[in-house]
Length: 527
Picture 1: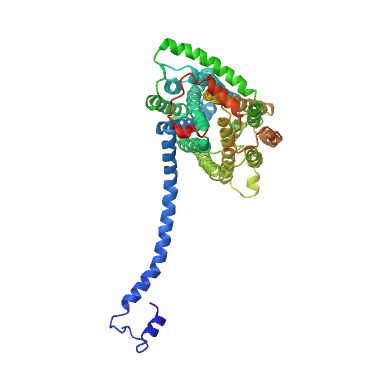
Picture 2: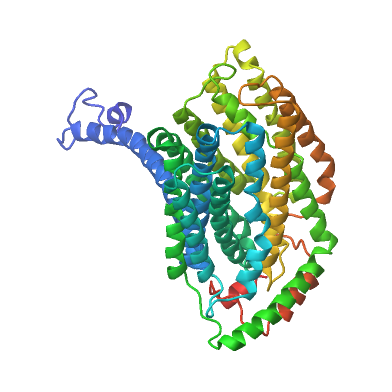
């Protein structure tokens, strides 16, 4: 009760602290003070609730995906994209760079060509896809290939780390072996993702967001720890740690849910041959559809035309004379912060961009991608120092911008790829689309190696490195002219004609379905 109200109620004693009933007014004053204190208390509750919602929202999202998609499927995505691709890929990138530079002492142009050969297992993804789709092992389509991926990756990593001085060709073979394990696991889980994207198309962007988030978190851990291990174990010793993710894949092969399809081995072999013919025919028919080959061509060209000059930049980063001479730990930190920025890119896409049409989204993403590439040119020409911006600050800023835009550019391509796959051969066809992307990556890295060699960028000569970066950026801008190849559909629209999707499914309906994830009937009706 305020003082003015007290005076009106008790005019005889306007300044008294006792009301007419003889009760002290101190209690009223305390109530008034408590009311004033309630406001900040309520605001604190709102803030606490907001913080809890930020923490709980991703957990609730994961719980929703687990309930609708099967928890072991979500576990498989986390292990394959988070541990196998995210951690292994990032750790492999830094450690192998130091391995070629410090142990094998190879020129950057040669390393760039070697790196292009890492794409061979990814180019072979249609073969892995055919194996997982039509060649089950003892009735299982997915489990055996997770185990195979783990065995190949673990053996390659251990031999590379424990074999001492290796010939360049043999070392390259083991490094390709590590990537082979990652590629086989990737195509196996991608088959599941592609099928789920068709069966529950409303969750297709969510599944890609989960893949991107897990990959970024794994990359963050891999990059942040790579410099430490290279410094303390050496590049070759650190490669032995890459046997850990394959071991997790072997375990995944035994725990992931999959129903056994066929018990009769002879019948299984006969069905495999029949399914192979169906899959090949379905792939040929689907890839001839303009709604499929046009976006596939765009994805290839957008990757291939962005030639990679990574090795030239890496050698320059670590050069004590011509470059900024970044330490091993700081190189890992640069990439780790970039991985954190990738998570931001995933969140931006998931929260604000996933409902935009593919063509508009990819056009502006490519435009930003080309523009951000100019930051590399500014750094190599040392214009950042002329502007008073320190090297360490500028390179971190450039890495963050580049990673965010790259992730935003990449994710709609993955969603679009998953939407192009016919039911029944979704693993094989998604692998074919990823093979096209891998061919683009191989082209990009090979062309980058040739450009570095053409402009005489070596271990100690970086005079023309800026020219290679300028060529790369101009090619990125040129890709904008190809955007008409991308369909102007949104993420929930039917990209491929319905008859293409269903004919393949009808042809394969007589054989056992892929039972890795059990889908409720009401969700199948969403197709």
